[in-house]
Image (cartoon, rainbow, N blue to C red; front, side, top):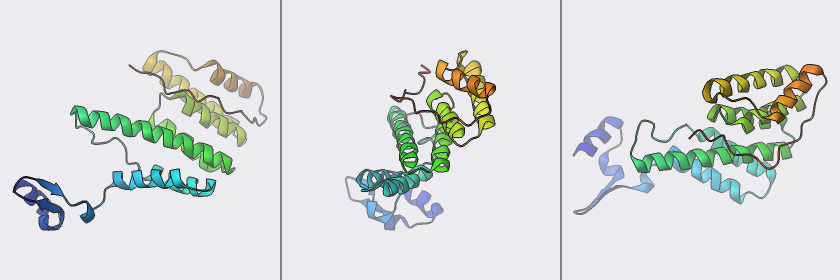
Length: 196
């Protein structure tokens, strides 16, 4: 009864999307789609892609479909676990998107993915370093320095730490020279900082 009233307020008829019998009540999966379902479909499509361009398109679709934290404010254990799993999946997806766009020599697209990584997790130093590295490769030394200063501020305020030696060295080199740098990717990728 309550579900039927909620669904009536939302628009669709309960009879269109609910499957019910004496023992169970469930949604008919053929009657609707969800952003999460579309996100997973795009991730699967990227895994099956034959070319870098196809992978880039599918990963880009998945990244643009990510709407943020899963069920924000819902604190049941299962929701928290799913939220963490989905956030990890999305972090990995953005790293793959950045790499494939670099493979395609799409510097602007790679930089966009790196900036999204920073937005997703401002404490993730690797993401900041990728923004700095890509800005340097694009001949934007001032953008590199701004990103470094932002990283420095966030780490100081949130963790009372300083950036890594690699990030400090890149910022210092740019302070001393205005020339364009092409900075090598870190290898292997380091995980986000543990805030626990």
